[in-house]
Image (cartoon, rainbow, N blue to C red; front, top):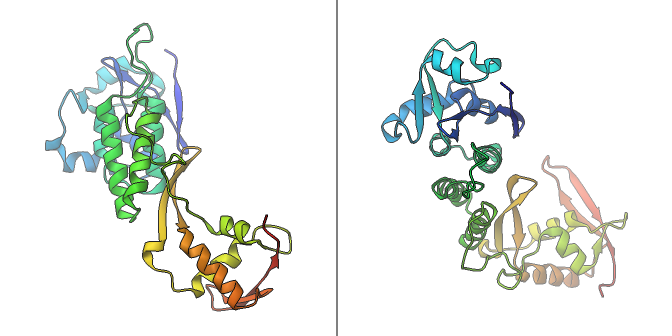
Length: 279
């Protein structure tokens, strides 16, 4: 019996299949989410009435577990084992909203659960079930709302998740260049305004210092979600009006080559700036 391994987050999960679908154990969930042992089991037990036996989980005896699964991880089983399905996993981890959990949740759905348990079948089983994608979208959307990300960017990320999971959408992605409003981070502003460091790099720190000197309204600051190499995170960007305010500040202050500021420890610092002509 060959032991298949799938890399998830900073850990690995031994592939387990039961009744034609992939499953995980509470220990698997705690391991990939880097939570103390017993965390997933407690979340499951606290909400047991919401889980459906045979759909969200399977309860099997220790002997059945040892019989059906690779001895490398099953031989030590002495008590009944709960096997969690894809949908059950998403329910167990619903309240986990840290960066690692977003990354792990997506990897498990797209790289672990979506694999075909029976390759000989020709029907379309490559993409995860729509119910699982809906659950993942719901969980991530709630986390993004808690992070106060603007609705338009939440919608864009949600649509990307559906597309990446193999479900076509009739509506255009909101992140298409034609529909997404132009935003700037500090590095992009530095390039646009010709603000560079003595090492000939766009001086994003100088732009950040200037922005802190301005009275920028919350409506001009946009916290956006991004996905890079499977990692989910948020970044702060600014609307074009902020760049114009920075441009005006530079003009009013005669394009200073030294911009003073105070660091997080209260120490006085200075940004040294070199201005370049922008094409």
